[in-house]
Each structure stands twice: as structure tokens, then as C-alpha cells.
Image (cartoon, rainbow, N blue to C red; front, side, top):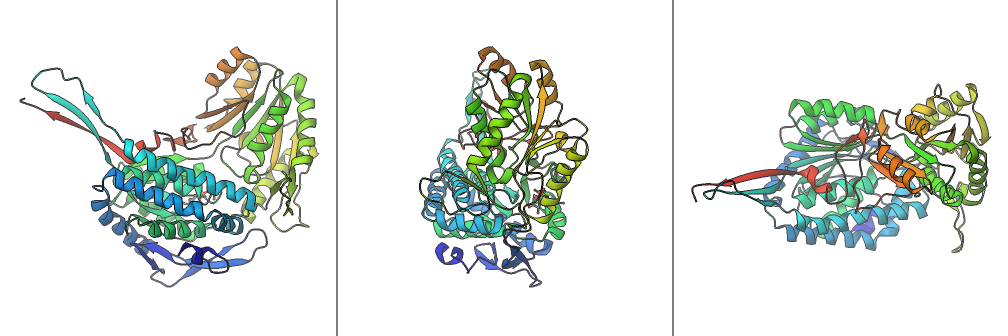
Length: 494
Ligand code: ADP
């Protein structure tokens, strides 16, 4: 059962293909580490293309029956999956805590958030309506129906090991697609445990398959998932660079693809802002998962007359709210625990950006270095001021606990800075001026805007970006769209 597989130290350690737990055909495995201390949690199969082909063909066979399974039945199965995960929130949270390094409290928030997509899509499954159209003549009647696209390839990152899968697989299954999930090599255990729960919920064999692969095989496996003639749609969340590679692969077969890529979120505080709300919003949007989320505030744009006050308030709030390393929580303690970064590469990238900014004249308000006394992968919550366009952190996604502050004078200037990015995922701003609120919300070149709010993700709303942040939307009633095709039917000679 789910419980056995997820309670430590027995981790799921095989892949899930066609309803069976399987090893790689070579027998090879690779280790999964706990980023907090570097310990190996378990080893999982190191699959290559021949293994993944079996998963694709299982998904393709299962599609033949899943696509004709009534929407209501698919809805019930998704709901059962949701209910089972709901009963195991602590177990999933522990798994995410161990393989992704999040605090248990934050991991629980992810489980609840991620699972809410299964609940949502179990409901949306029954609402994939079509249209009856106005016919131009009396001898014809016209109709649109929506049909599942086929097998979906689901490639996910490590920063939300559960939510990134449920948000995609929930929509795929609701639409009537089957899927092959390739989780990030850093966090495959949550994915495997999810598959086990899906099976326990009664989701038929082959409908969900999970294959694990080493980083060195991610390229070939990704290419196969995009180019197999048995796959109809690809959905990916991860870096912009990998997104571009997959988009190119998909061009070959004109595959549908949805991409959730990097962001470079502006977080604008105008002179009229409610400073307390802005500070709370900053903590929420910057420090969730230690800044390792694609909607994390990346550039703090602060208007002249509140610049210093905001930096001071944020600095105080960071003292009061954040704690680097494990905390012994009491029920009244609202401290947010910051864990390690996911791996060495990520830590080096963050530190490189910080040192680059300091070298080029940024002022260190706090932090600015690793916290080696806690472990190899901990980084101090940092504030840098006087950030300028020549610095890496001005243009690139930091993906770490670093606040970089830029001063501006006018609304026009700040919009120009905010929109100067190639990314356009989330954006946040704080203002009490109603006409400014509408102007800025409409002018920001992003897919999602938080207005006087730092935490915006929810299954009811469409998640996604513009420009190089991606294609398509996840969640909301639009989420099914990525996994469905419209069909037009013309009834003639009536
Ligand atoms: P990050 O930089 O956050 O690790 P990536 O885009 O590298 O983001 O990783 C996201 C997902 O993409 C992971 O599942 C990873 O294994 C996979 N991946 C990495 N490189 C490739 C590639 N060349 N082709 C396909 N998938 C890849």
C-alpha cells in the first residue's frame, strides 16, 4: 500500500510501467540524495530509451480504453486518487522534505496545494463541453466536440515534486489522455509514490506510467518523449533552455506542447503602497521554497521615497519571520523555515550571481554568503541594494533566497524596467492608487499579476506565462485545453 512504500526507510525504488513495478532493463540504478545532509535515500532505475518506449506503448494501449471511459468514471477515479493523497499528507510531506529539502511545514503546503489540482480536475473532467453552432442553412447542423489528444509526455522539475505532476497529470487524465511521467532526477520518489496511490485508487494500468532517468539520459529520453509517434502532447515545466530544446523536438511531428519556463518576476512597490502588505507579500513570494520557484519575486523595484523604508521593514520582517535551518516549532510559532538549496549546481549559480553583483557595486544589506555551519547547501537570506542592469541578477532568474533591490522614480520608468525582460511569467505590484492599479496591471508583460498580493497560485486560476516564459496555461478551466483537440462535425442533407 501507499503507507508501506512511503514510510521511511522503505522508499519506492522501482519505476511504474503498465501497472507493474519494474527495474531498468540494464538493471542500472542511480542514487537520490537528501540535500540537507547529502545522504543517499535510495536508488531508482536508470532508464534509457528502450525502457521508456515500453512505457509509451503501455500508455498508448491504455489510451484506447481510457479515452472512451465516461467522463464521470474518470472523475470518480481522480477523486479517489485525491482522497487517498489527502489521507497521506504527512507521508507525502515527509518524502518531499527528504528529497527536495523543504521544511515539513512547507512540504505539507505543497501536498495540499498540489492535491487540490486533482480535486479540481476531477470536477473539470465532467465539464469538457462542446458547442452547437448556428448553421448558415436549414439543411445542415454544425457541432464542435472536444476529444482527448492522446498520450501525454509529462516532464517535471524538482522544485515542486508533487504539484508539478498533479497539475499536469490531473488535467491529462481528466481530458481522457494517458501519460508517461519523467520526473526530475533529484526528486523521483514523490512521483513514484503518486503512481502507487493512483494504482491504489483504481486508475487502470498504463494510464499513468512513471519512468526515472539520470541527468545524463534526460536529453535522449526527452527527445524520445517528444518524437515518438505514439505521443501526441508534451507538457514540460523547467528551465527555458530545456524548454527550447523540447519545443524544437516537437516541431518534427507538429506535436502539441505546453511549456512553463523560467520567470524574472518584477515586484514593484509604489509610494502609495501599504508597506505592511508589501512586506508580507515580499516574504511570501520571495522565500517560499527558499526562492526556488518560477514565480518568485526576482527584481524588487522600489519607488524613490519608500525605497529605504521598505528595505528596512523587509530586513526586520526577515529577522522576525525566517529561520535558516531546522526549527523546533511550537503551535504558536509562525517562523518560516528555510531549507538547503536543491543541489551544488544551484547553490553555485546563486552565489555566483551574488558575488557578481557585489563586485559590480551592489550593497549587501544582509547575507550574501553560504551558511556552511548548517551544511553544504544552505545560503543566507540576502538583501542586495543598488542593483544595476550590468549585473547578472538584474536579468536572470536567481532561484535562491536573494532580494535584489532597484530604485526607480516614475511609473513609466518602472514599466520600462519591468518589461525589459525576455521572461513574462508572474509580476507583483503594491499600490493604493486605483487608476495606477489598472494601468500597471494591464501594462505588465506577464501571464499572472499579483496586485497587493504575493501568493497567487490556486487551481481555479490559469497559471502560465508570456514571452519566453512559456506556452499554454495550467489549472483553471483552460487547463484541459492543452490535452484536448476540437473536432468540428457537419451534419448535411437534413
Ligand atoms: P532545472 O534547471 O530546474 O533543473 P531543467 O529544465 O534542467 O531545470 O530540468 C527540468 C526537467 O527537465 C527535469 O526533469 C530534467 O531531467 C529534464 N531535462 C534536463 N535536461 C533535459 C533535456 N536536454 N531534454 C529533456 N529533458 C531534460
